[in-house]
View 1 (cartoon, one colour):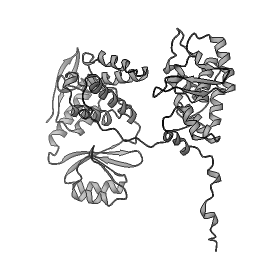
View 2 (tube, helix red, strand yellow; view 1 turned 90 degrees about the vertical axis):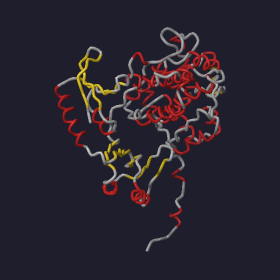
View 3 (cartoon, one colour; view 1 turned 120 degrees about the vertical axis):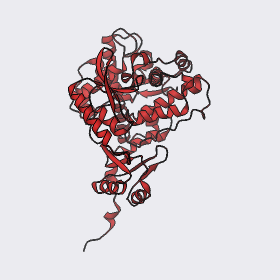
View 4 (cartoon, one colour; view 1 turned 135 degrees about the vertical axis):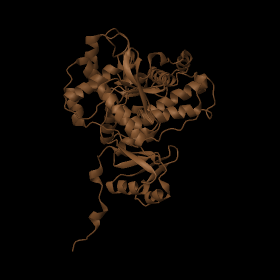
Length: 437
C-alpha cells in the first residue's frame, strides 16, 4: 500500500511518499514535476499542492486495488521497430518468439529483442496475460535528455576524484583531454556511491552502476567505455588490483558509418566564414584531417612553410607524423599569423595559451548552420570528410592512413564504405542476360 504525509524539507513543504517498489509506480511518480527519490529519508518527495494531493489520493486507490498475482513487465519499443524486454516470456512465449523471422537473446543483460508489430504485440499479450501485467514504453518518441547524476545528488554527497589518480594519470603521460574525462566520470562514480569508501565498492556494485547508466541515463557506447576505463584505471593502476578482479564486459561496438560533408558543403562552409582566425581554423582542420586536440596543441615552429608540411607531435598513440600543408591554406595561415601574432601556439586564446576546444566546436556548428548545412557538423566530421574526399580522388589507402595517423589500415578502410565513386563503373551481371520475350 501507499503511505504519504506532509513534511518540511529544506524549509519547503513537501509530501513524503512510501510506495511499493515497482517500475510502474516509479514511472507514475516521476511523471509529476520536481518529484524525486531521497536516499537519506528513503522515500519519494513531491511538492505540496492540492493537485498533487488529489493525485496521491487516486494513486492510493490504484495501488490498493492493484492485483498482486501478476508480475509487472516493461516492454520497450525501440527505433527501427524493435521490441526489447527482460522478463521470462514463458515456454509458450519462447516458442512463439523463435517462430518469428528475427529474434535475439543477450545472455549478459538477459534481454530479448524481437521485431515490433501490432500483431506481434497482441499475440504476446495473449500468451503472457495470465503471467504479466505489461507496460509498453515507446522510446521512438523524442524525449528530454535525462538529468545528470550530480544534479540529482545533494551537494554534500558530491565527491572529488582522488588526487592520487590525477597524479598517476599525469605520471603515465595521459593527454589533458583524457585526464579531464577520466577524473570527471570517476568523480561522478564516487558521488553515486558516496556512502562507501572507494576500496569498499565491489565489482558487482560497479556493474550495477553501469547498468544504471545504460538503462536510466541512456549513455552512449563511447561514454560507457570512458567510464569503464576510468574505473579500471583507478582500481588497477592506482590501487594495484588485478585486471581479472575488476573485469567489466565492454559494450559491443556499433558498426555505423561516419557521416561526411560533400565537397559542395565544404565550399559553402568555408565561403561563409569572414573572420580570418576562424577561417584559418576550419580550413586547417579540413585540409589536414587533424584531430581537434592536435590542432589546438600545434605550435608555430611545427609548421614548415618551405616544405609545405606540418609536423604533428605526440599525437594519439604517442606517435609523430607529417601531414601536407595545402598551398591555398598556407596563404590563409600566413595572413592570419601576420595579423594575430600568436606567441607559441598557432591558435591561442585571448589571454594566450591553448585555444578553447569548446570555442572551436561552437564556431564550426555556427558557420555550418549559417551555410544552411543541416548535418550535425563537428571538427571530427571535417576529418572524416577530408579522408573520404581523398579516397574519391584516388589517393591510396596507405597514404590516407599515414595522414590521419591510424595505427591500423582497417580503421581507414571504413571510408571505402562511404564513398560512392566507382560504383557507376561496376557492371551488373544481369546486363549480360537476355531475358526478353
